[in-house]
Length: 487
Image (cartoon, rainbow, N blue to C red; front, side, top):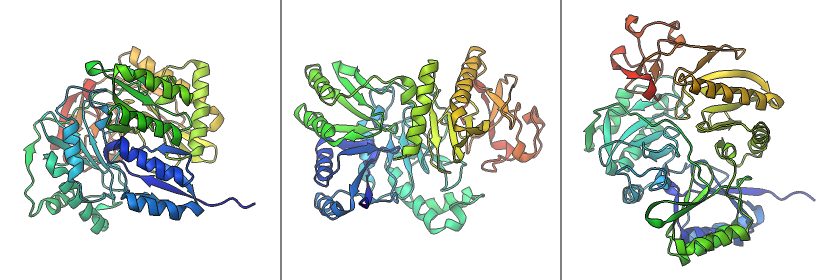
């Protein structure tokens, strides 16, 4: 018998937050269409598969409920945010629930480019995986804006801090200009940032604030995001991760009903494809334990299984991850402060300090960020053309090398590898030079091969240097202590 065709349905949850009532309605519609499980995506959205003969009914119900969705498409990437981290993984910030909600409410269109709204005091949600990356500054209601033009890798720093209320307008105008002028701003090796800035701001009256200091981000660590955990005012939060990345609809329905019963208003999805519930009271804690027992949900996975980023709905990536995690467990490998990404497609925007990138069938390259911070875009090849069955061994060696660097207090200088992957340690350098426009780094120890500058070339000795990423002049670089450098 010929297998029936299926369709992939995607539902965006702006900011990774959804009311328990709305989530329950989505689940009922999906269940009535024969859906048994739902997956969470890297951008905090929902995915589920539906048989072709049930699609018409689902579309009718989604229309009645006024729920936006896409079929086998991702034309409108979800807005992601660090709202999920509020009061749990970061507490010292002006960026609270009300600010997030006010900004979400001001979006009167569906963005076609990726938008990130993140608090700079956390490392749970990626900073630079969007096209428009708004990062909270120390000044209340003002944000840094870093733009990654579509299908490019460099970052352009907006010359002013952006006011919260202006975020939706700037995003809409900037997107419109990029999409109408693709020959200048879309998939281009060179971008005229000044011309783009003028086009976005002409005739507009944005509320600006001067940038008084370069953005500095915290060192990366991934907080443990599973289980029932106590936080403020005697409340608890619950994090649920599923090894196969699928959540049974019945399980999610029971979660929504208990939320409604116990007056918990919202559910949160995370970029790590997990679900989080805040505000659980001591009196209701046993009820949440009962749900976990009923569905045999394990919430104490090893940390080295939780720190992975995979492409959405990729069985191939999930199978490879399971293989590598088994090898890590057999070796009893420590992976604290590291995260891993498996990239099967060329440009997926996944977060990772260690990248396993598919080269061809069963053959991969291993890369890492120069300082092992996943928010960096400065990648170094560790090994090229590694057979799948050798990946675990090579990754274990790389992890052990990382901890040797930590012990030597030399993690920031990391290592440079030749094409064969043999590491040579570089000397610790106290000062590097950071481009204030795109945050790229000139490090004397590495030089700038793209500009023909050899390693160990002092920055002060360069006469007419320009940034390899955004072509800013030498005068736009500022000295920064290496221990706080983030690219």
